Image 1 (cartoon, rainbow, N blue to C red):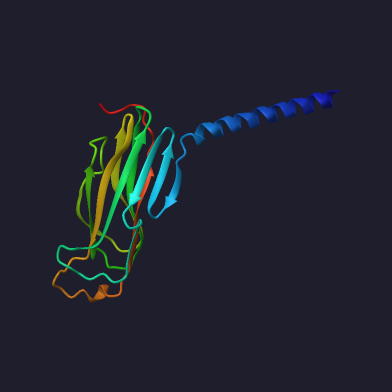
Image 2: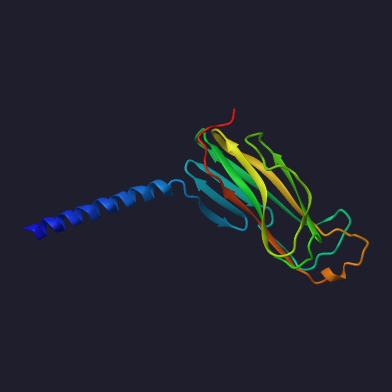
Length: 196
């Protein structure tokens, strides 16, 4: 008789614990970003909001034959972040410049970022003037942006340029070097307070 009570109590505790884990898991799943798409675009769905990223010409920046030039970019990546939200929440995101390979010497390459809020909603990632790039693989945060309030298809447009400047000094050490990178968009924590 005592064995049956112990088994029943044990099964009840296991059942309640399983239910509790399932409820907690479902709560956290609501805030998980779902990423889909390929080179032409990525969609991140968070709660009642959606960020869509469209890269012109694919998301990768690749080159193994960069020639130095005066004030002319060696590579250009244009992309648009589009926000749609059905709540009053602020929908934040972060842009990252992910360099997967860079065999150039430190500071041989540099980058700039220009940004435009096409629909004047939220906050765009700020402009970045010419900034040197260190050699090797690394991730560089370009900054944070957001969309605010109930919005549908509001756009923030960006242009990332990579330069290999002509210095009028022998740059033979950078012959045959390679560079590979892409822009990553991360979703931030959703805030329940909207901007005025």
